[in-house]
Length: 289
Image 1 (tube, rainbow, N blue to C red):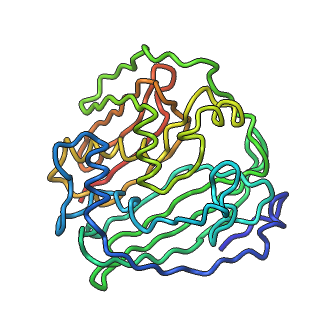
Image 2 (cartoon, rainbow, N blue to C red):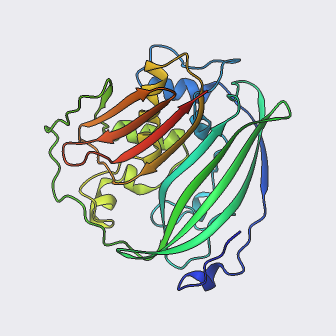
C-alpha cells in the first residue's frame, strides 16, 4: 500500500487497516426494493437469478450506532476511514471486474482491504485518495472484484455550485440509449434507506443548503451510476458485463431533469449523465463478454 508523505501524509503514515471478511446471504428483498424504486413492474432479480452489475451495493451494509454518527450523518469512525481531522468524504469513482454474476439467494463472502492511499493537490486544496478493494466470493469462487476510489479532505470545500436550479430545463442528446429521470426528495430518501446512507445532504434540505452550500438536495453518486447501468440492462439484456469503470464528476440536484445516455459499439458501451447545464455529471465505460 502506497502512503502519501505530504500535508495529510503524517495522519495516515501508520494507518494500515487489515483486511475484513464478511458473510451474507444475498436476500432477494433489496433487489425487489430497488426494482420498485426504478419503477419496474416486477423484481429485476429473484432467488436464483444473477444480480445486475453493482446491485451488490445493496448488500454488506454498515449500520453504526446512532451515537457514532457525525453532525453530517457520516460515521465518526470506521475500519476504512482514514484518521484525517475534520474529515469530509466524496465518492469519486471505481472499477469492477465481473468473472461471473453474483446469484441472488446464495451465501456470499466479501473480503475488503485498502489497496492504495495517495495525496494529491486539487484546485480547492489537498485531497487524500483511498482505494478500497472488495472481492466477492460465492460457492468458493471469486465472482467479482471491485475497487472504489474515495476522496477525503480536511475541512470544507469551497466548490462552485449553481445558485439556482431550473427544474424546467431539459437536456438533449442524440444517443441511441436514453433514460430520463427527475429525482425528487422521496426517491432520494428511499435510496438512502436502501443503501444505509445517512449523509444529510441527500434528505435534509436545510442542512444541504445552509451548512454545505448546495442549491438543493444532492443526488447520490451511486444512484447516478446505477441509472447509467440501467441503460445496459434495458437495452442489452442478453449481453454479460465483463468489466466496467465509472467516474463521478459534478453533483446533480433534486428537481433537475437528468438524462442518462449511452452508445454501443463492438463489445463496449459508453454512458453518461447530463443536465441542461452539464453534459457529464457522471461517466462510465462497460465492456461485454
